[in-house]
Length: 271
Image (cartoon, rainbow, N blue to C red; front, side, top):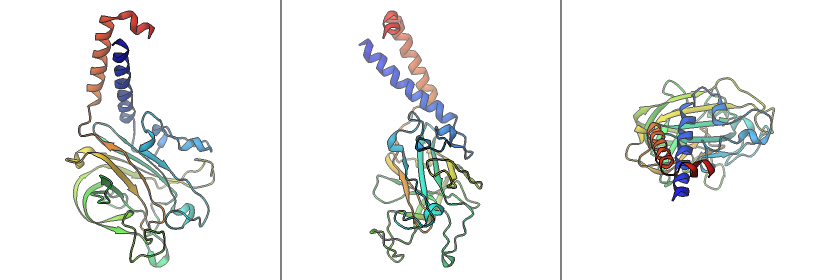
């Protein structure tokens, strides 16, 4: 019985630790608070495992001038390199690393395509109910989306803009604003992240209030690509039906410790 109590309290403290981490996430384009580094090695991409478990992030770093990405081409300038997500009692946090500058013109006639928006799909059914603008005067605004724009590539990865892959929405076409979050897309690039040390990287970082997802819960996709959809990336966090407040978790954990200590003081010291 005592061992079960200790395991329960340990799990609660881990949850509280994750909430404490989230409280320290600043939407400033600096990814150190996610546990990420710029040391020029592969481990730079590995986040804090307490904050971001494996299902909540994806890394697909590529390099080169005109490397084949997925589904299109474009090399480092269009590389969607990594995405990280975390949920606390108030917000969905997103961090994305890309080689695409926020100042890239959206000029298809000149073979230039600007950044797309975050697309959020509950249930994994391809509906992409919500979108978050990443650029312009509306950046950070959250919409319940009526229609999306799409890229240049079909489901097989062939160039086919008349029949694009609907699994990769690019930018919000129509929608109703349901809230606003905090979002930054860094204008200044940095290098020395990962083994491709000369590549330039930009950051999109956001905190989206959970209130905008009222009535939605469970596993969902957070997806991002640019307006050509040359390279798409997504993560699959889970939104609980209710998320405990960090203070509630802390009080419950402390209460359980006090109860256990009162019953078996020596067991806690020797476990």
